Amino acid sequence: MNIISAKNLNLFYGTFQALHNINIDIEQREITALIGPSGCGKSTFLRTINRLNDLIAGVKITGAVTYHSKDIYDDSTDVTELRKNIGMVFQKPNPFPMSIFDNIAYGPRLHGSRNKAELSELVEYALKGAALWDEVKDRLKKSALSLSGGQQQRLCIARALSVSPDVLLMDEPTSALDPASTMKIETLMEELKKDYTVVIVTHNMQQATRISDKTAFFLNGELVEMGLTEDIFSVPKDKRTEDYITGRFG
Image (cartoon, rainbow, N blue to C red):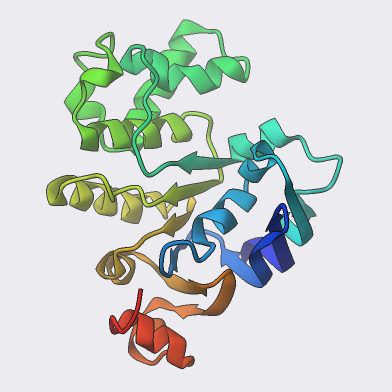
């Protein structure tokens, strides 16, 4: 079942067109990997899914992006609610300069949770969901900035989970991490897809083959092709896809 769809999506930064006529369906409870060379539109497309491009001056969008069949760019869309349902994890871990507990409780408090017992339950639920609870349960009052890079990234995943999202967007979440931390995040993503829809931008093609169900190849702002990951990497339909995944460019 499709949870997110883009139809004839075009995006402009001023006069520069960054996305050209994107048509894509993202399935519920799957991991979809977006691959392609730098500057090809992957992260721009990811940010259209929860309207983060609204924060950039001069952006113009045509076409439609739907979430549960509702156009997210319609004037009636509650953008705060949209971003609660469609969470984002960035390339560089960005914990808030506050305690581990307060980092996770921040979102629920923002959305009205004040009850201490309820917040404690949510914090434990989110940290367990991000496979971090056992490592930090005895130091929840310590600064989140005291965590390692890999732990900080899992904390940011937990922070996204704390408001019970439907979809998790991940923009190269392991590019700043060592191999051991990368493996933990990849294992975590396999678990997360049981309950969430995950869309990940990655430059690491081995990572895409390891974790994703479907892969979409972007080039120069266009979606060249999308399909089952095993098909994209073994029998791509477009020569440009084959050239990219075999290392001829990019």
